[in-house]
Image (cartoon, rainbow, N blue to C red; front, side):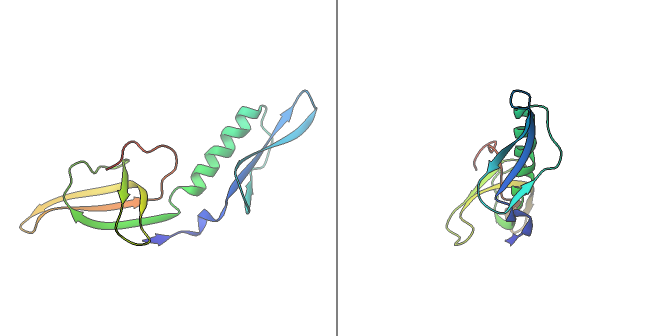
Length: 125
């Protein structure tokens, strides 16, 4: 497993212009410091929140990656979620980026590349 430094941001802030108050208003996704600030101003709260959420997801996804080889399982596929248990430090859910199924004289195996997920996984294996 490897960890990337891009996961250092704990929150993202974007701004929108309130016509009622005639001022620039912030909206924050996530919590904590450091906070990534998006430049510019959106027309609505919904647009600013969507921009902040998108950037937050981008910054959080792939903060760690995992490569492993395991016994074959045809349910494992790209874009699915993988739950790892029994391996200290790796326990939890991972998003599968790539999987290679191999059948050889050694048997059926899967070589998996995964990363930390964001959003809702498509299914757990």
